[in-house]
Length: 145
Figure 1 (cartoon, rainbow, N blue to C red):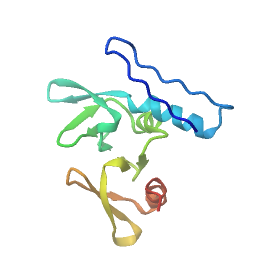
Figure 2 (cartoon, rainbow, N blue to C red; figure 1 turned 180 degrees about the vertical axis):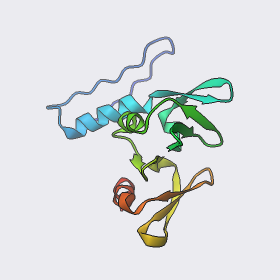
Figure 3 (cartoon, rainbow, N blue to C red; figure 1 turned 45 degrees about the vertical axis):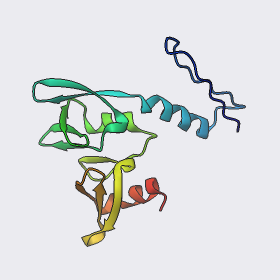
């Protein structure tokens, strides 16, 4: 596969062209990853609304029928439902970690086995999250273990 990069002047619109023999799963996954990497979400913190890139989110969680996006050092409330966030993050490094949590595997610094077959995921920002036993295979798959 040949990769070409051309720098353009600031005023011109950036463009990605994919040339392939056929639209197979690999090309579709690459396309989805490109589209979702620039995906912007809205998050509310206090009385301010922020635009967040999907890649800056550490994890998504639902608590008492409310949804939250967790950044490096800030928590944002969002109107997204868990299934909507999963659809938005499909094809990225996000994976379901429990009934109420989706974690960005790209923000995990290390993992450790815990009690009853669960795992603990230690995030780059110092937080520790539990991965339920039934979702451990998803964790291992996304980390390539």
